[in-house]
Length: 136
Image (cartoon, rainbow, N blue to C red; front, side, top):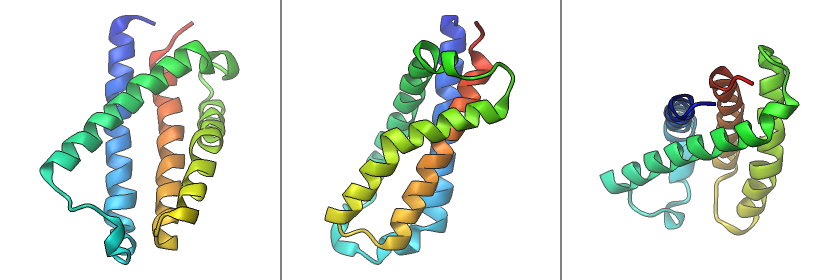
């Protein structure tokens, strides 16, 4: 994988993650988030910038993970294989963490569902996108 492919993959994953989180969490489940007002910090342009930068960091880290580990476990040009890798990553890295956070943090149940859906879609999209930029 060249530096250009790595950068493009990270940027595309970052954009996809930002869009997925905005749509699922910010649009579909935002009303559920508002049901627990004492849990949240006020939203500002700074918080949106930090969130977007973290999405691009996720893109870079997932691309690195895919290149070093994931590429060995997917079938080339098989989107379902990439989606399965994303689902495995979701189960390993987000599912348990989000559920355990929900035990201790005053989240609305619908908001937890939205976070889980967004994370699942983000990992699956990241695996598919990284697969488009990584050639053996």
